[in-house]
Length: 153
Image 1 (spheres, helix red, strand yellow):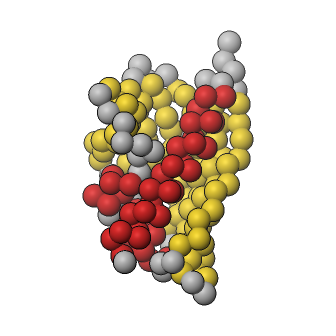
Image 2 (cartoon, rainbow, N blue to C red):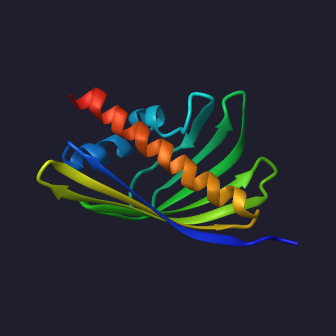
């Protein structure tokens, strides 16, 4: 029997950089690949990437020695303050693990910008993918902060 679990994950980061820096770090695939894995033990390998409205990313991710998850991202909305996408995550046998509706919203602040990432995730594989999304996004956003500080300072 399928165990459906869902949650809304909302994470924030105050950044001493303009919103364009966040969009640039995401839109540039080389930059995104450098900060978008939660740890040095993991990898993301893009088969294709098209950060545009109607565009699709296809990728493998997971443990560096055996990336066993298949992901597909569909971009629905992109403007100067936000982008919205859905993401489908499956195991290497193409069994659905989770589907997310994700929003990255960036607002200008006096010191730079505020990034709010909201992930409305539904797991078909119990609590694990929900926890993985929460923990993964926290680590990825920390990596983004480090990336921007290193590359824009």
